[in-house]
Image (cartoon, rainbow over all chains, first blue to last red):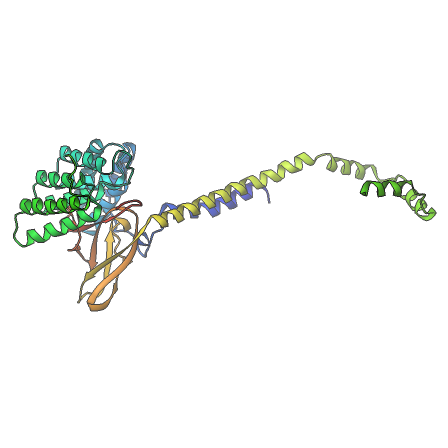
Length: 224
Length: 170
């Protein structure tokens, strides 16, 4: 066996293995059939926008996912392209707000909050508090994701962005774990469904969580 | 001890029969000139032969290394994923599946199975992060009422969000 045939054999083995690895291989990514087909012309535009995203250091996967979502939901070409283009713009804004250290999941969550009506300045406040959450040495990946998801959800439920951000800042300064944010959202959703004012529910529930956290840490709230 | 035995063996006189056989063996053998030249050529080029052998084995070693690296990466990816259970109540549904950004909204990718009390369930491995999803119930999309809503609903059909904590998260 000469060296050329060995190289060829190695490539034959490696290329499928590497493409499987690139595809993720997770159970959620596997299955029969294909993604919903994009309308003619949309794929070209989405590919171009994805190239543009990569060139700016932004994730391109959310753009493809957005296009596929639009196709499955039966949106027309214009609507899909508009949504993908808007998402690219939002990702760019939040990248500027959160900085280059933000992970892709944080960018997607922040873009969603921006979409819901949170301003870049308010996002920056959350990011700053979150940075203090585990101290300067904290390198926890995607630490912003859950607070931002909850923020976006609550603003979409008509909690005013300023009240929601202030309340979340209070909890972030107490190093509230992700589980607290998740249960806070559920509780506020329940209160709103029972007729409470969204802002009042947000204030009352976050104050209760803060008191509970202070109780666990010996009753000394952090300096804000 | 071994050295001493060798010296004794050399100094001892040989048996005449052995002496004659040794003399025969020491006698130069005449061979064809072409054979001789070919043999000498083969003997005098061991480094070249060794280089050819390396040319074969270096790609094999690189390929083996890459395969090992890919395998490790796949294992690492599996380790980073979390198994999440999704469920939805759909008593009259005939077919329910889970769609989302993790499977590029492909309704055929993750079918759900009917569990007890008409609740459809599926367990999937998801990478840490934020994922937007919905249930496809007989072809109609439905959000998960228990999960945060995906506010970036650009297409008029609601979706939901699941957050998969990363390693080292709370």
